Amino acid sequence: MQVHTGNDIPEHAYLLLVASTAFLITVSMTIPFSSILIGAVLLRRDQWQEIVLISSFGSAAGGLVLFWVFYHLGWSQIAAAYPDLVQSKMWSDAVQWISAYGSWALFAIAAMPLPHTPALILTAMLPLPASHVFLALFVGKLLKYGIYGWLVINFPAWFQHLANGRLGSSVFRRRP
Image 1 (tube, rainbow, N blue to C red):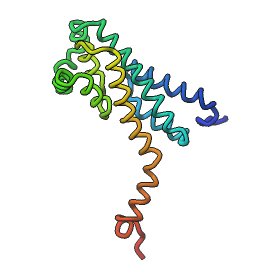
Image 2 (cartoon, rainbow, N blue to C red; image 1 turned 45 degrees about the vertical axis):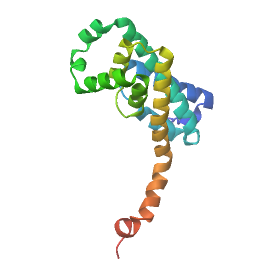
Image 3 (cartoon, helix red, strand yellow; image 1 turned 90 degrees about the vertical axis):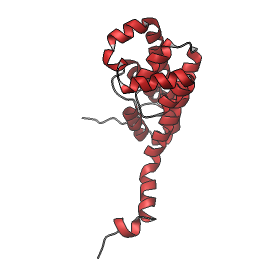
Image 4 (tube, rainbow, N blue to C red; image 1 turned 90 degrees about the horizontal axis):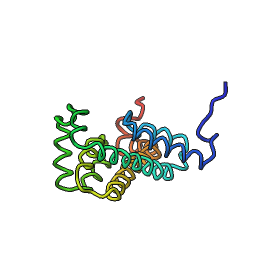
């Protein structure tokens, strides 16, 4: 049995696969894409910035599709389909943020490690242009995924530096 790694796939095909995965996972609302992003970066460490960029684009495009779906469903159908969501604390927080700050709030929510579906539902009920929604999602995801990608690439070296520096003498060194 032969094991394939991410290096077996040509660069452009790998990036297209990652972007498509980000898009499909975002649209399906099944799992957070961040776990897939970490694996994708680990498989192609030298391309982590391209992976972050294309993942942000794919996820923002998926978020825009959800925005359009929620926009066309309308408030009554959304409330009927997600009665628990509408009564949750996350929903009330999203209502306050989006109502007060519009796309800036969507940007902040997209940049945080929180699900952005409630914010997209509410955003679809407000008069925000689709271009603002896409830009807020893209830049927010770029920030979040950029931090995740950077941590995946740099964390082992950072941790070793930290262990050898401030903490190394007392915690991580063997005692005779």
